[in-house]
Length: 301
Ligand code: HH2
Image (cartoon, rainbow, N blue to C red; front, side, top):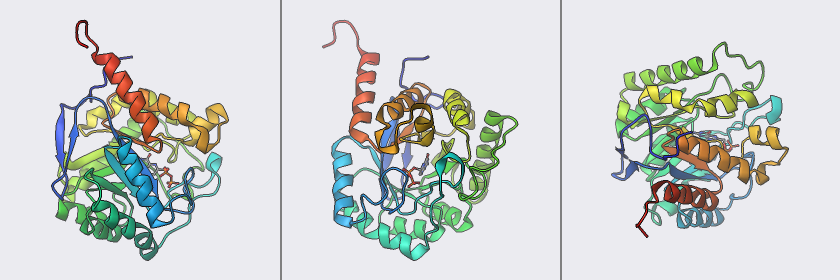
């Protein structure tokens, strides 16, 4: 296993957000702190429903070293299989009602880029107008309006791999060749994005850990994360507290820090550019110490 935390597969690069903020990718992965403004997210649902508490939580994450924030106002927990019931559908108005007060307040308080986790073009447009910097779309542009908004504003987008509807995706999972199919389908998503006018240099890709995959397939995607680098886009990994960790260890969602850090370490050593995590303090400490070990040299105190 390589010990360096450099972002493999791509030279250090800077991604410019629509509002002028920059995402600088070099060295260890950036830490993206997750804030779910939902009643039903799988690990922190219902904790941050009040805007004041949510803002406080986001500020605490930035204070602990989050370099990006990811605000989600619709749970995307897949239905079926080991994941239990899927997330409820959330109308645009409700998603915006949860999101905008927190986003607007945070925008005045923090300088780190704010990502919005949404599948809806209308929500993306309103979020960008309210000061969001990038869009994290787990459907990889199912909504053509989202592609249009991203192309028009020039904002970076995260395209995540998944197959089928959320409510169904843990049923009848089948891949003939997991890696080739995930890489191929992400490649197809990149080409659709570029055809819609999104610049190739503004795209992150994500293997979609936990979305329409078995526990073993999640492990294999992490193990072979390097394969995603052939796509030429920085790789974001979201393994934090996910069910494959529970499947391996029996731990409930709020007690999966050790497993989540193992996934962060693996992703870091295999060139991830961003890790999306719930536990920012521990993740920063983990990555900072690993980076210090990696860069330690005789005679340099
Ligand atoms: N995972 C979740 C949500 N959004 N976005 C990306 N790019 N990658 C991921 O792996 C990913 C994601 C699911 O986690 P969480 O937000 O904690 O739960 P929920 O969807 O139930 O709100």
